[in-house]
Length: 328
Image (cartoon, rainbow, N blue to C red; front, side, top):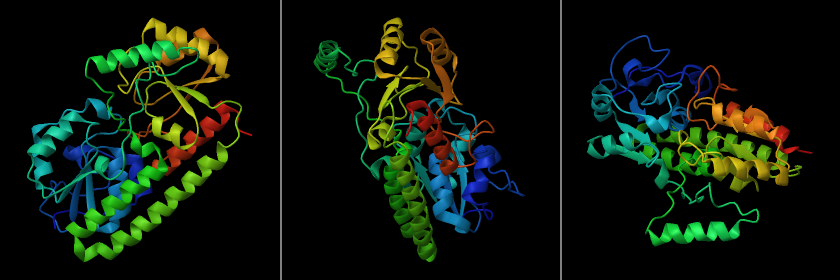
């Protein structure tokens, strides 16, 4: 196998996570590139994929990531060095449609094992968030839908599937099977590790179900539409300032609409995230007399993250939602 060193645990790695293929990993004492080692070398496209590979692979894998901490994954552009090193890995783990540059590089790569997380669960269409909410606006929504289909277009499928612990566990199972097939010598350990991980994710799912079962409101405002799967899983309604693209700018009409919805739905908080500018969220909150807080889409771990790893940040997200929604 290729991989270089004994990786630190999934919890510890997230403190320094994703230092990129150029830097490889925080605790590495050598500077060997991906490949040419005795472990199962996995290249992950961004943090949620890296976390899965770390947790499932344990000591048998070396995981490097294409997206550095603090880098917005949607905007990733790959260097020639990253692309070359991807081809030297034993496996690449990515989420098709989230990062076009990664999709293109993987399509052209001859890496033997290509694991597309999007194929391991069902992605869904969560609609055009700027037009689909229907507080008295059903006619407008229908008009927009007609316009959308008349142009022959469809909404893109929402890629933010890792924010639903149940779907994330489904992906984990698929990743483990791919690891077992590609590295059969350690199949038993991969199976054991994924069972531990899915149990952990099951506990997280239970915590969200219990914590959000009874709340004053079911509506929350976010900076961009990353939380559709989470909202659907736990009976909530996400209202995003922007669409699936975190850098898009909302229209004045959208801002006015959100101000009206805040009053109608008893919304108290506008959530923003650590990797994207909070300017629009704070402006909306100020104009509408709302609070602001962080709801982390877990696209990367930095020193600003409210947790050291996926589970820790999701637990922080749950607390933030419980507060904002008035959980009983």
